[in-house]
Structure formats: C-alpha cells, structure tokens
Image 1 (cartoon, chains in turn orange, green):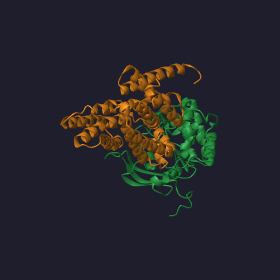
Image 2 (tube, helix red, strand yellow):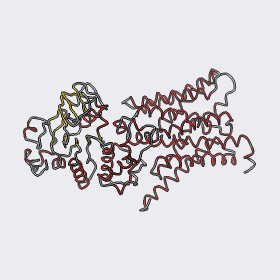
Image 3 (cartoon, chains in turn cyan, brown):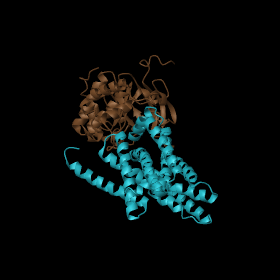
Image 4 (spheres, chains in turn red, purple):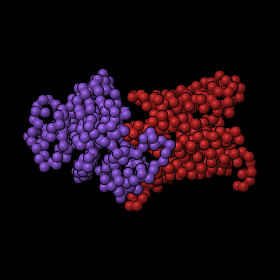
Amino acid sequence: MSDILSYTFMQNALAAGVLVSLACGVIGTLVVLKRMVFISGGVAHTAYGGIGMAFYFGVNPILGALAFSLGASMLMSTIQRKTRQRPDTLIGVMWAIGMAIGIIFTDLTPGYKSDLMSYLFGSILAVTQADLWMMLVVDVIVIGVAILFFKEFQATAFDESFARTRNLPVDLLYVILVTMIGLAVVMLMRVVGLIMIIALLTVPAAIGSLFLKNMGKIMWLATGLSLVFTTGGLLLSYSFNLTSGATIILVSGAAYLIALLVRRLCKRCPDE
Amino acid sequence: MTYNAPIMTPLVEIKDLSAGYTDEMVLKNINLSVEPDDFIGLIGPNGGGKTTLFKIILGLLKPKYGTIEVMGMAPDKGRRFIGYVPQFTFYDSDFPIRVRDVVRMGRLGPKHLFKSYTAQDDQVVAQCLERVHLSEKAKMPIRELSGGQRQRVYIARALASEPELLLLDEPTINVDAEASAQIYELLHELNLQGVTILLISHDLNVISSYVKTIGCLNRTLHYHGEKEITADMIKDGYNCPVELIAHGLPHRVLARHEEQPQ
C-alpha cells in the first residue's frame, strides 16, 4: 500500500479527496436540508454544455464549466422560485439541453477528444497541482460563507416564510447558496464526473441527517463520510483496476443503503 | 406620524382591502382593526381567504385595492413587531434541529446578520420556552415532540421576537382535542399577560370558549368586535362553516361567555 502513496498522481488524488470532502460536507448538508437535490443535479449536467463549448472555442474547459454551472444555478433557481407551474419540468428540460449542447459542440470540434470523458465520469487520478489550488479556493469561499450565514441558512432551510417575516434577506441567501452549488459542481466534476456529482454531494449529508439533530454536526459527519468514500473508493478502484469515480459512488451508495437499514432497525429501539 | 406611541394606534388597520392571486379576488372589501389586548378569532371555511389575509398582514402579498398598516407602517416594515405562527403542516417534520434552536430563530433579523446569538438572546429564548411550559424539552430534537408540543415550540419562537401581536394560522390543526385545549389555554394565559392575538381557524368549537371577540371570514369579513356569533351574522349570508349551525341554536352557540374575564 505504501508504494502507491509515493506516486505524485496518487498524492494529488488523496489531497483532492480531502479538499472535495470539505465542500461536500458543507454544501451537501444545505442541499439536502433545503431539498435542492434536483436543482443540483440539473446544474451539474448543464455544466457539460460549457465544457463542449470551451473545447470548440479552445478555452480552458474548467472556465466553460464554471460559466455554465453558475449560469444554470441562477436560471434554475429563478425558475424554481418564480414559476408557479411545474418548475421540475423546466429544470429537467434544461438539464438535457445542457448536455445536448455539450455533445453537439464536441461533434463540431475536430481532433482527439477522449479527454471529454474525464469530465463526465471524473478522473481523480488526473488531478493536477492547479486543480488542487482551485479546490482550495472553492473550499475557503464555501466554508467562509457557511460560517458567516450559518444561522440564517438554517432558518431559511427550516421555515422560509418565517425567515421572511423576520426580514431576513431570504432571496439573497438563496442566490448565495446556488452560487456555492455551482462552484461545488465544478470542483466535484474532477473527482466523480458531472453525471455522478449528485450522489457524492447528497449521500454523506443524507446519512448525517438520519442520525444527527444539529446542522453543524451533520456538516462535520458528512465531511468525514465523504472523505471515507473518496479515499476508500480510490483505493478500491486502484486495487481492482476500476473507474475511480464510479467506485467512489458505489461505495457511497452502499453506505447509504446500510445507513437506511440501521436507522430503520434503530427506530424499533426505545432509545435513539 | 412618528413612532412614539404605538399603543395608541391600532396594531393592524385594514381599510377597504381587496386581494387575490389572479384577477379573481380572494378577499373582498375587508375592514379590520386590531387593537392592543385584543384576542380575536376569525373562523371561516377552507378557501375562505384566511391564509391570504395573513399574507397581506405579513407583507408577503400586496393588496389589489385598499390599504393595510401594521403598527402604522407598511406591512413589510411593521411585520417585525409580529410574531407569526404558521400552520405547522408546512414544516418538514423530520428536519434535524433542536427545540432551542428553533426558538432562537425568533431572535433573527437583519441586525443579527454577521453576529452570533448573545447571552441576552439565550435568556429570552429560555423565558419563552418557560412561557409555553416546554423548558425541559429545550435540548430535544423537534421531530421527537408531539404535534401539540411542536405547535407550542412555534408559539415560543414567535414570542422570542418580543412581538406586539401574535398571528396564528390554524394553531390546532392536526392536534388532538386535549393538546388543542392546552394550546388555547396557553394563548388565553398569554393574552392576560398583555399579548395581543389574532388567530384564524375553521375549528369554531374550540375558539369560542377562549377568544374575546370573533368574526367570520369567507372572502368578505364580518367582524364588529362582537363576542358572539349572532343569528344575524349567519342570516346576512356570510356563509360561516356548517359546524356552527350544527351545534344547537346558532345564536346560542357562543353564549357561555359571561365568565370571560374582561
């Protein structure tokens, strides 16, 4: 085991796991408690459009993904809040259109493009030093904002209309939150790929909220679980020569099923 | 008008107000004045505009016609003096949070941004939990409380903002008869301590024995500060809920009111 740690790509991958877990724990908890899982999935998939366009125009794909993911966050959250009729349909359609744009622009781009797969399915082993710096910046922003507005995020997630009657800037807080989701998507894309982001973002927090009663503690547990899933998945994928992103997601999924089962059994006990 | 003597003005003043979400008016020509120390129960059928009236008072919906003032101000300014207790069916009953942290939300506001809760906040929160007789549940997760206890937590949260007026939307919906009586008992207590209360419900039977005055809301409002629902109110075609008539003579329904302290 110790020999694989001597590879730079492995060190980078493990570091990426740590950095990604911090954002996952914080944002994932807010996403789960505020019931924004579907929007997050939509934002993640739409980001692929940005990658396709960036390839076509010869721009850094990360920038393309960032632009599309922030744009999609804004648009989808506006739809979610301002449309009275079936916001989920509109978001679902945008989700597919985003992917389609990415694929069409990929078709139009001449030359070798297997690299695009890494954005869809992730490639934690290909994380570079520059990626790590980007992840660190996202972490600092996300954690800073979460600490700054912790009690307000909690209040709006629990009962938005009450928060509004207390004259809290509910709409601004929402915009801040979807922006953070957009940032997290770009970061997680490198690790598990756009298609599977939704699981890594929500599973650790979902497990946390099954067992804990306090948003702050759920964030901590979700961060820890996320670290276990990424590291465990990475080592498993290395040992059995499997795709790392998919292995990480399956480890998370298995843990979630076990957690649901344990929770169900626990309910029968008088003590929690 | 300066905001020096809020006690002298009505807490809520609604004049000739109509409102709705589309061109159809859910509320028509409403006039209502809530005075200090009032304990008003408004009854009306579902779809009669009860929740819409609350949205108007809280500044969450703008009226189409007429005026509304809260503490002599526009509702979105004046609502900070209101303690709002929403219908708890709206909540995620599984949300992981402790009772004390829910009540603390009553202390939030624009001035509290970027600040943590102070010792004074915690003191107010503790007092509010005591007023609703739930001090010993402070550290419990809210999802382990019964429906009636949970409703009292939301009343404590509203009290934590030290309001001039409590606004309750169907406080006893999904609560059993005993818990429902406890909630009204508590509201009665709070009213005696000087809290003004306006509540809406479709449950006339319980309201009747606790509130000071009662009105009917079914798109239009019939409220003149009466203590009883009179046969006239019903005859005038205000379409009060059927249960009202089903329990004996209409004008006798609320007659057991003499012992009510003034």
